[in-house]
Length: 259
View 1 (spheres, rainbow, N blue to C red):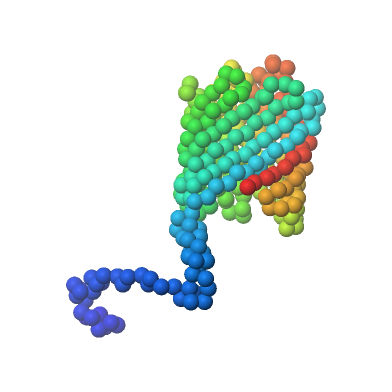
View 2: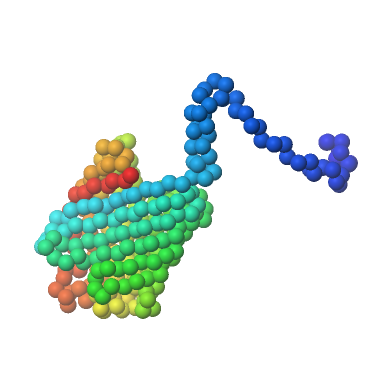
């Protein structure tokens, strides 16, 4: 016998009764407009149990001042879906004014939450530039690490069997409620030489930067910063053969915007 409840152990009647029906009335309707309360309950249901939303973010949209020809760069993404499953579109690119675009890539990904603050994604990446264009299968993870570091890791397998990888990280240090200092880093790797697009094996290139932005609104923040980009190893050698400088320091001014 269950001494605490006074019920014989193993009693088949325990827990077999049907659950009571949920209440059909709402006490708040007696005090507030029932139509408005119905809208509020519907919104709460979307936010907690069946949320569907979307967002477009341009984390980088900037003008570069550097030795030689000035340039530009962007990095943005858009997602649509719920808390667990989402369609994620990413794009980034860069170039110099008056010259053909140097790099342009688009990713289309299925993103799924695998644990609090972390998403896994799979999909496709297509590089429109440089020529010849390349298409890759993508697998990766993205999320917030302890101490609020935003990290992304991706691996790419091209339609020609080439393997590449990318690691990215950033951190928002709030100086005030509106002024944010953001250091950033990106490293790119290749498992083999890809001379047709100027890529060597190993660590191909890296970027280190820092930006200071002012959030006029959370959704609208101009910024200034500096970035050091360097091609490494065989990739640097191929760049020199093509008449390019593998080591570039740029001063940036841009806008971070989302909606």
